[in-house]
Image (cartoon, rainbow, N blue to C red; front, top):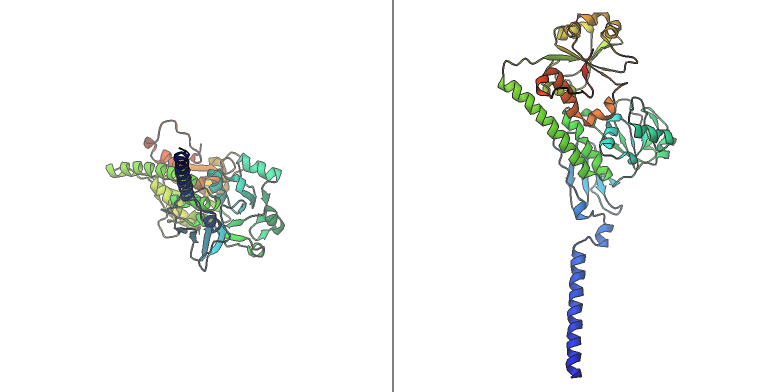
Length: 387
């Protein structure tokens, strides 16, 4: 009898050991091992694919344990989750997600704002034309420091921000040599060079990869893309279904210091004009700005239907103020018919957030060029007809 009992107990212990082993095996197979984690592998369910659709300034390639990001032609970064991860030759290793960084431009800051990631921003070049209350409060209480301007950076303030990387915008002034000497990794942010409005906004994904918010970046951009393309499709449908539909003409800029600064025909703003169903008077291959004599601008835009102006006027802007700045302005048809499209950067957070809102800019312009396509009583965010 005792022998039978012993056999049964032995069998039970055997089955119990098998069950425990099975549970442990399943648990181990469902997660990364400590060895994998030490090599910098991200947990499988945390990896979010980044697909670049419109931006031309950066590209992304994923492998099993690192993400390779190429910026322009000369800058290459390997985003890893461990310092022990090995990276290809020619790539600068960046441990992600980064915790601290410095933004050099409002365009860069807009990416962090839309991703709800102000905590990562520890330094700015300045606060001119900033409206965001959270950013202003962080600067005031010292959570964000001001590091000076391009060409005259305060290295002590840069070090005080303790950045993991610094996002730079390599304009012609540059002045990054003192910062380079600190050994801090400089990451070019080339959103300002994008010619497609959606391409500029897509740099949300670029920042998202560095701060560990790829999923949020994908979702934010998908919404922007859908709203922009849906509205553009409505404009296209209007012009294609009715060939006789009038496409208004528009020009841009003002006289400053003896010349007229106007964006080129391939600039992203010119593309927004076209997507909003208007013809931009400058039809060339220039991507940035052009300085023209008044006579040249007048020859191009004397009979244009609309005139777009963006400035920082200290008081309420008016047609009287526009004429006072340059008496010949009253000669333009758009001035005579009161069709100046205006945005005052002292009243709207234009550069602070508009780079990630091309859909909003597009809607403002469509509401003016083709108001029948927009809901009644639409309240513009940035641009409206000057009263």
